[in-house]
Image 1 (cartoon, rainbow, N blue to C red):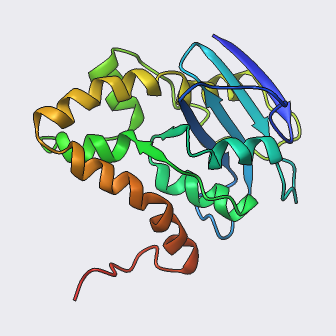
Image 2: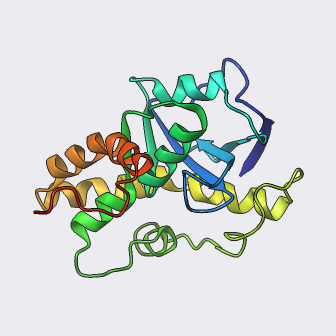
Length: 203
């Protein structure tokens, strides 16, 4: 595994292939209140690029170009939150997307354990640590332990997607999953508009 830390944006000319795993670290869990601090990206090749976002930063042209690229699928675990954070921070609509948490919830109805750590352990045979999950991601200098933790959230997503796809097909839920993925950017927008808790489809 190799981590590459960038300040403010991705370097120009960097490519991730047709599917890039993406994750965010933030100062909290409310996209309308809390600051985006770090964006992690991986092509699934053992290399992770981490973009540290500065306080008050509103632009990251190379990163946003990738997030909006219609030819590159952005792969998340619980994409709803990350997509909202990126939209709030930069005004970029991240699409198209694929979410391992949604896929898992559609086919693993025999359990309520859909967290990344559980899924990687069950489906990929990888154990990751969540020790740094609640550390200070707004620090000017991030520790090696923080960077390794952040990298672990994207390193294995391609393998997890590959494990979930045949189960979606087997259970006849691939089309439903795709419709959910397509709706995620709008779901994130609704969150930012205040419909984060209200069930708008309910009577």
